[in-house]
Length: 466
Image (tube, helix red, strand yellow):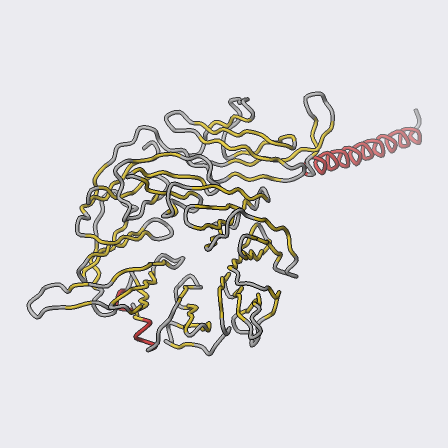
């Protein structure tokens, strides 16, 4: 074979191999694109479009059963391709209770379940602190700090993310109303009534609403540096009907006085001019405020105000009062409007309505989940949960109207001394403890301890193996 023919053959091989590589890359990319779009081969080797289920759990490593089928490969903190439609998902782990839910998989879409919590079956209640003199308790959002109040001016701050609890005393006398101190007394008396206590997101400040002698006062307590606490009512010499912390350091507050909305700068101790007149309801996400205000003609305006702007942006006019909320789900922002028994969800950008739901009752309170994945509306013991993943609303009812949050995704009630928990959508009802005091909160710290109060004692249980 002469050199010319050899060169031609080698050139042909090179061209052919490169062509095969290009075709292979195109095929791989095409297959991956189809998989990402939800297409998959079923058991009959037919191409069908499917969805993706992503499951996490606390503790990790729980077994997953889907539609009654499981394998050693199926564990939490993993993903699973499933045909569109309803599927029953069951999580189990040796030594723990189980968790289950029927999910509706949509073709081409991801469905996340990140909140399931399994509780250790065999738990031992341990008395960790005598709180027989305490009259009030509150737990920080990160569930690491607890404040215990009593009828004196010496309250206690406790780090509950610790094997050994060591309460630290905090003197509230300088800034709380309803305080008296006899000349020969070592500690003063606190006679005010705590209406509510809201923490900031940095877990360093608590905003108290205190009733004393038929008057309301607001106190911002700095639990890290008590000397920096401030009685807002006395500082500004005015009566506020509502105050809300709007930043992570509790330096910026929103306050309502005489039905008008103002901003308070705590560091400079300054209050702004009126931001919104005749305000009915509001919610904020960072520096944006979604509000409802009453107009002169008796109608109501929904508007959006960005702090620092001179004017608000009107969004809609409605004929009756409403409650509103701002939420972020994935990378999109949503406005929720609750008007009588109608809940509507709108996109932030153009206020376009995404969906609406007619309920069987008219809620009077609204709360957005920590990650924006659900919205809860309630009136007394009736609850409606809007699951943003599913795009569905479920109405359900609890034992009594006094419910609270055990963690960011689980609510609890104390009924006849029983501590009963539910997922945010009302599923997976479980009884965790008995003889629990209904006057104090319960909580989970560091995903390992359950705290509650019983017979004048703070009780702690391990909820995971240790």
